[in-house]
Length: 132
Image (cartoon, rainbow, N blue to C red; front, top):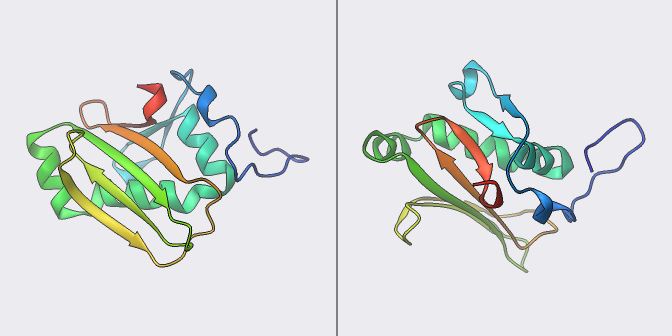
C-alpha cells in the first residue's frame, strides 16, 4: 500500500514479496548523485522506513569505503536486519559474504526482521533483491 490521503502505513511491509521487477524508477536527485530507486524501494520508504532508504543512499554517496569499493566493483548486496532487542544494522557486502561496510542502529522501530536490497553502480539503481 502506498500512502495516500486515507491510507495508513504498512510497517509490516505486507506486500513486499510482490515486488518482482519494477515499472518506474524514481530519481533521488543531485543530493544522492542521481541514484534511482524502484517501485519496491519507494514502497519501503513510504511505509515507515524512509530513514532506512535515506541512510542507504547517504552511505552509497558519501562513505569513502563504499566509494572506493564501487570504483573497482559495481554490485552491492545490502541487508537491513532488525533484532528482537530493537537494535538493528545495515550490512553492505559484495554478495559473496564479504562485508564492505556496516552501520549499527542502537534503536529501531522496524516491524520486519529483514529487508534485502541490491545496488548496481553501473546504472545507479537501488532495488529490492526481488526486483533484480
